[in-house]
Length: 441
Image (tube, rainbow, N blue to C red; front, side, top):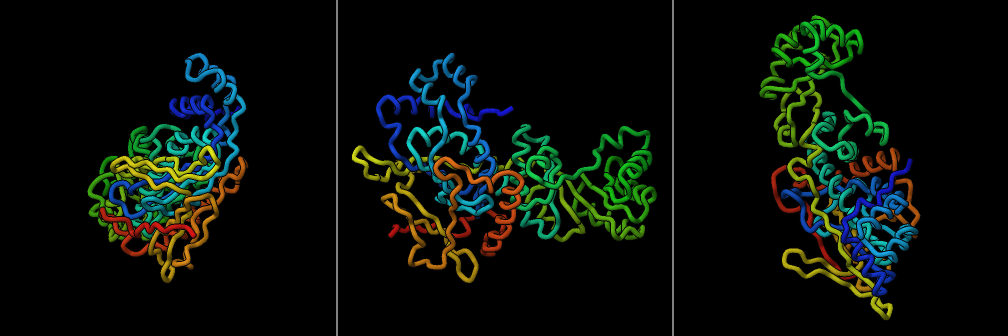
């Protein structure tokens, strides 16, 4: 059964539509742009995520009988608008940064072109998806950088709403995490899943040894045993006695992790379990992971911090009208001038300027008209950042599903290599590269 996404929309989108249908401006060609004025939390770069999900949700953006009945019964819009919505299909074009791409202040992450009626109703859905997923992906990328070559697993489903948990697992995977505990994310997006047992498993049994033996019998010696339910040192000794020195791993979920990890590593080596890996999972964020860089830790599991954007649960993106045709059919740049919330009018094209393979600037060319914008002549080696996601209403399916998710992950890991060294620091600072505005030629 298909579920409509049309009412994942703020009411004022539809009241504006109703008024535009009444005064004749609904069909006026427009350009809307989704961007962020600044990076949340003094971070040095952002990560675009959610694009593939948005495209799939756009396909289901249809006003069926149930949706129209709700709007009618609650007097949201008039009869003429209901008639328009009954046949609504997005027929415009959407360009944007590839999912997994890095973004900076002012980056035109998504450009929606179509009639006012076509484009205005997508505002809430686009912001809902990209603000959430990009916040998670940005935090996850910072954690991935801090972890280095050590694997990361996302395990925050219990700290997020059920649908957000699945989306967060996907965003974290795109930004460098290697696995998730969420099975729906595994089924839907092809993300590797992981997980063995919680403390309740140990507490279920009459003693820790019974719990360990049962887990080994069920899952084999390659499993990971949780050793901190009672006493960590005793738990490690028991784990090796039960499983032998070929035990796959032990997990630590409490204590002063740098100290505990060192003690557990020494104990495992003394017991002959030199190949047994140590995974830590106690309220980690990018700072805690970085603090463990010198510790004998083999893998990390991150929950609350990653699914909540590590303290910044939104990417603070906005969706603004930046160009429209006037009554005579000429293109007019338009912009908001409010204090601290000003925008730049005009259709934009974005390029990543590189010096010897390292990003040096986000170059954004602004067009007063509607012509295609070429690579700026002063930046001939710049990399174009925008791709066509929807053309005349037709969605490019290569960005969706498990294939699109894997592609976004590969793209992110590739472009992250372009970042200058200063971008890898976790402290608050200015964006890693400046945003340069140039006039399109």
